[in-house]
Image (cartoon, rainbow, N blue to C red; front, side):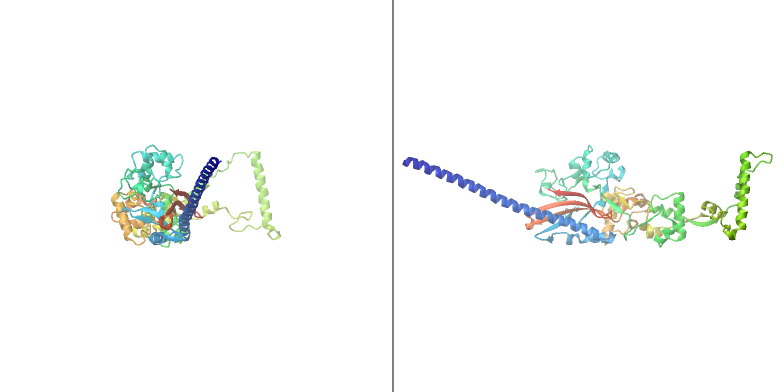
Length: 487
């Protein structure tokens, strides 16, 4: 009996141990779930903090008029406004990559600081320092079939892999992470130099676009189609004679660049009267009836009709007071005005005659160049912003080299607001009208598409979540072209 009691006791003890283990396991799992829930909550908070940074950027772009001065203010204020911005229980920071010294750059990244692979020619792409031979031609050939939607589409080209495209920044977050600065210890391979090499992606985009507006944010005059009156109304520094000269130029040779204004010949408008010889020739060209020719039955009918018409006309004149229409000067028998074609024969024709002089000098073109365009598009794709593009990108443009590109960067750094207009590049040491004319239509001083990398932080950095968005304000409404969540 006692033996059975001992066995029962042992059994109960084992059951208690088992139940205690189960209870401990459940408590442990519950604790993990609580921690996981808390971590999820913190991650969610960090995510929405990061998203708040994107929304703040959208609001900034919506409120900003898009002038060169206001865009410069956004860049200047980025470090004080977009770094560790407090919101709720955490902060958010906007990163725009790293500078040449490895220091972080804050704010929004201008997509017009890069070459648009859907727009630029192969000769431009081929000048990039990391572009292997033949890749530029392959890019242009593929986009001819279908435009690239994202840089990742370049991975379909033989010779371009993830390392070539993104370099050390394989997660595309624009930050130098620990695994991107440890040599070959972990993926991706890097040189551990403390600087983030972003591969070709540093210089390329598929999204850049700019509204065709002046530095003040106004619509430009179209030299290819606006009439002389519109030109003089919109550009106060252009006289009527100069406007007539612009119209005459496009009728004879046209415009391939706004800087073609320097080649416009000054004209004088004269009224050309129809010559007497021309009138006589018109009369001679009219066939006269043959005297000996007998009229056919059809001609007889025509003569009868003419007599009836004469009788009606005389009857109408005699009974004008009784309701008949009296023919007035400048009207035909039916009381109608002559057609425009008939009037044009009677009116003298305005003719432009060259004077042998230039309509604009360099000083005049500097004043009006930013107010004019030769594009018929309200939104121009792929223009390079001279205020944000690195010298490597500027050096790829026609007429440019590395020395001139570096001079542009140095000059813009000395100006408080950067370059106000593209024509300001003539102030750069080494720049000439001939060089600028080659690339003038590929450049801008303002932008309308930006990339935002926003990082939300909770508990002083214990939890960090990053998101990326490409924001386009070139349309009537601002919208997000691309969204990405960083690992």
